[in-house]
Length: 329
Image (tube, rainbow, N blue to C red; front, top):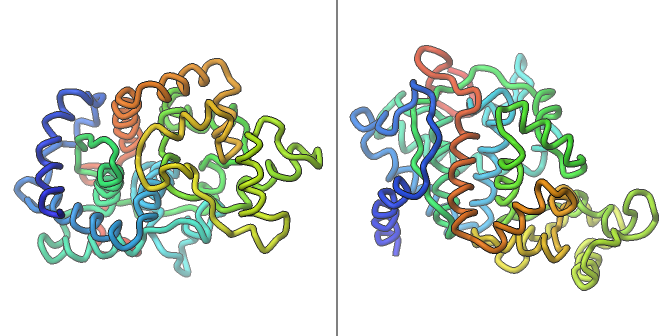
């Protein structure tokens, strides 16, 4: 099974070049950057991700989220992977990451294997970028080619993570503004929100919709009734349910598909920040389109991921190649 999957991933690469045309990337990045210096890079990353998903089906969504949370804070530089030190207050304990960001050990293991195969060669940033790509593909989603050559940052910022990462409690205007600040647009907001086709959310991120929507003392009136009842049983109105988990897409929670968009159309989005996409004419039409045409979603998702992976990248002599993803050299 594993060998077949790796072969299939190789075969689809040509398909992806034909049907997923990524926008131009930084001239410093190259699709064959490690061909000579670390020829087994892709295989080592894919093996690490495949093994991790086999042990924990949730980890695919976690790796994808980790990549997103890295790129939105000071660019894609693996800053999210840095541990706190006496002189550095990193991003792991920022509100959007604390007790929710996962997958660090997976990246550590892949990095360790790469250090054995090609020491001080592959950046943690490129590893995280490739791991997110493989996580989507191994979950049944699209595969897109990734240009490589990113280098790792030497700083991190808890404050920037708190300020720059979109929150499930924010209005669409705020979320869109945060995307625009990173060079993305409202289409990218909708497309990348589709990552919520896999993964789980803690109850506190959506409980106000179940019991006290907009301080009304009542549930969100737009929420599908049967879905509301189910969520209220999973997340009762008491503090000890805050950290319980609910699938973002309860129909196919571990499969990357377009069911997320179908559920938004049916007023069954879990997060308010997701469901509001149906309340704006600009975004609702895109949601409906992706709910009807899964191949369009796959194509656009790959393109938006390429754009995101190029936010604020360090190349050339900037940054460094960390030997341990958790600490600066």
